[in-house]
Image 1 (cartoon, rainbow, N blue to C red):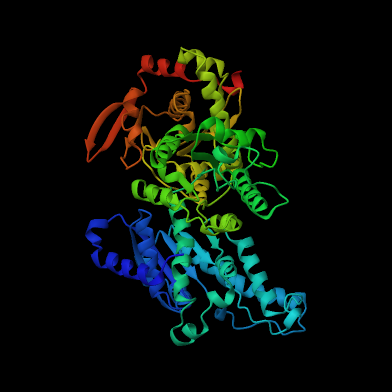
Image 2 (cartoon, one colour):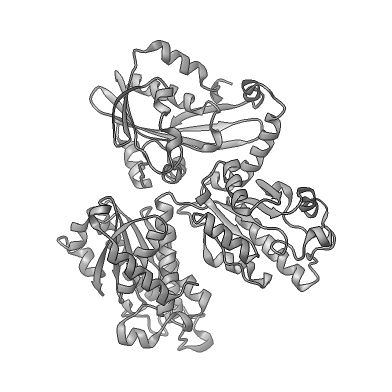
Length: 590
């Protein structure tokens, strides 16, 4: 838990040095709240900066949500935010059901408040192209009705619970409800709510809780900007089992479910498995002899985690910072996608020093607290969950099988043929929109322009006759990858512009790019275009594709500040035929 005083000190220093002229492309964030939000805004900006996101923030007036939202000439709309954060407070609810009100009266009153927020979301959406992050209501701990409080629909607690649930239920795609109520439950309501501070200064929570409150929102903003953690890297000894396997042996480590310490480690393993089931990649980074480190996975009957659950297993005597870099390289993901969980504080500090991009968990001494500690940090904050996410971890395990098979081949093309790959490209359908948006928004390396779009924007594009949203799928003898490439084409006059082109790095060098290019050519010719126009915009992460269009035969037209503009003449039939031949087999033709 962050120290509030130190965080505020660092935040003030950062804001004092912030120069708007140096950050003209800063993210525009508006914060609207019913309680005092000054400290919240200050800490939010600083924590976003720590995530590599510079933000310019509009701070609404105290108790000014309605005033800002429903005034069409408000400063909020002149600010034109990209993200709007709404922080309601339970004191906003001025009317509750009376104790003997029935279900109908209670539902009507709930709908009145739900209607206020749905109207607010709709109004903001009509004025700004933005994402809305709205906190749910923290339910105060008072139980006027005693044990009957939760049993009566008309009680204050039941009313606020139902209001929270209805806000989740009706929130449109551009609105994310942030579970602040859960944070308050974690620490205890009397620890979260500071009644004295609220009555004196209208503080929404205890001051020392503000960094954690801000962190909930920072994680979601970071996910929107493509900063997504997706791999949990685990130490072994005294982390997923008790003891040291090199000394105690695979049958001497602490994992006995009939013994308290062993049960605690198994509980943590079970939590880790639930992360894998939701799509988190699992890796091992241990100072051990590899054969010894693998023995518990293979022989100990009390192990819940198995080798097939681990996408990358690294056990040696090298330093862990170097090993983490190797894990990221093997998995073909960024180092900033890693979450490191190690019981040794010295190892954690070494990783923090050498790899500040890695999220390092402060692991407690008691293994009984491992699962709740990792859960409370919420490092794996994603905006949505798709079927591709659920298959991700297994797909990396299958990649290990592919690599093992590749070692049997000297010729790479022969290896590709042995994979028995097939693919398809088609226009995005309604069921694929979520995955299409997710891949566009989280892809950073193979991403030619790094443009981000919401699901609503993509839905609008699908209805535009001058826009084509294409997605590519791939499968091989081991598994189906699902949607692994996305392209957005926009027709101008006689040209077609490649607005976006992203691809999962898991399928590099598999012919997917040629398969996609074949379809881009087909779509361009179908709508009567003579040339394809493309652009590469450099970022800190997409250097791997800086010469991508040259490789496809595009002509470089201009280059300024690293931005490259290209054209491809569709009459270049010779080059076109080459790339069509290089594309991998189509599923429908197999």
